[in-house]
Length: 307
Image: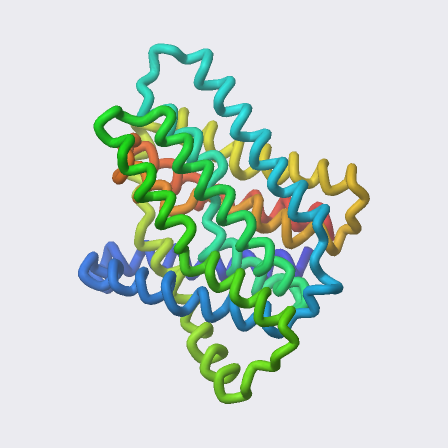
């Protein structure tokens, strides 16, 4: 339990430092937007690519882990569809945003940060590999959900969003890292050191940016839906994943990378997708803010359960 505490508390201290920095004017929108692009398009891909080039994928790749992680996400999508089906009076944009927030986790910033600081190098490589698969399916499902429930005039944005999904820099880095690893080519020392330095920017800056994006002021209006979405994302999804991992016979060590990624709070990208595809933007911000705050406690509970 000590390892859980010394991993989770510093991570969320950095997140809340980002929130305070925004309020004090140290992280203004003119800074956060380009900083977010720098981290997402360069630093995090460098972190993922380097981890995968150094991994033993033939030994670490476990198809059961990948498949059961995907199945858990699909089951939660089904649960949100049943919930929305019984609420005919609720608008489509609200339904679509609620559904995508319940399955669309913050893998790049929080998921990789917890994995990096909590897991061994070998297990972090497994988490990095799983990020590529999970990010692909959750982004595709988010687009489909918003397209299905969204406003008619915004539905044409779906194909644009699908294009962005498949050219996601983290997905490309994960794919490229696995291909490079399996090719048997060794990364030159200079390139490896360059990627190591660049990837050092990813996690601390990413966590500060997450904190700067939080907006608790919208929670009063959307608290009920945001809380239900957070329960599905932080409790039901990782709990279901853990059950499936047990059913297929995974050992505890193999479960933890998948559990960390499934237990991530709603991604800030849910806000961007809601804005682009006619979702309910304020609900997306509320879901991201509440789930991020609550994930400090749920992460401690889930990781404490397996240690």
